[in-house]
Image (cartoon, rainbow, N blue to C red; front, side):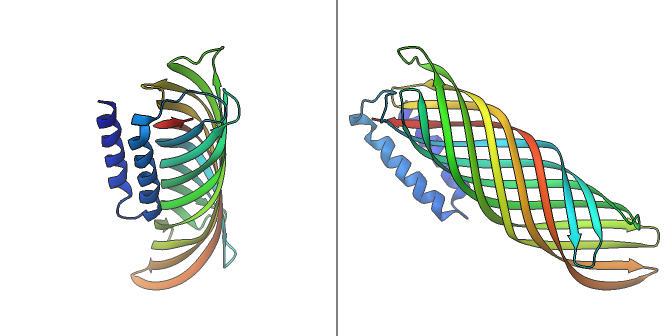
Length: 265
């Protein structure tokens, strides 16, 4: 029954990545091989044990603030409402019976809807929708709370950081006193920093397989360059232009994660 449950989780997540993420397919293959070997492995939560985990989650940002620095000198402030779907693949080792340290790969899909205000007040309304995919790697730490003997259900705290890159696209519509614009853009040169921490719960369905549930805090800092194509309508005349913007976006949010991990002595 357990093998069937894990099989369907892997099959579902494999389907999500099958079209775009060849690296993920290799990771899931390695995890599948580890599961196949569980029939001959009898492990427990002890120093030196290997931790292999996978998880998926969402993050919701209440707000963020862009700083746009346009190539022609205009500066715009923008409030961002963001939703994110992310996947984490982790591998670590128990340095003590309670403490796990290792590294993780994070793949995130980010969707934003923004309302902007230009400092020069020429544009009265500005609504933008942005989608981006990022890849980041970094360390993680997890500490389990239990007394002498681990139980089937345990609380833990976890912290992680990552740095990475990615790409995205944006669609934007503006309206002013005398004109309106439709703008599209492609993002390149993304540099993202991430830090997160949270409280979680692990329930071991066998000695080697633990189900993880976690809630916590996520901080993102994105730095990127976006190249725009704009079509502006003014008194019936349509003109086209191209420009670029260097953008920084720090955001804070609440993150919810669920997944499972393998414990190999």
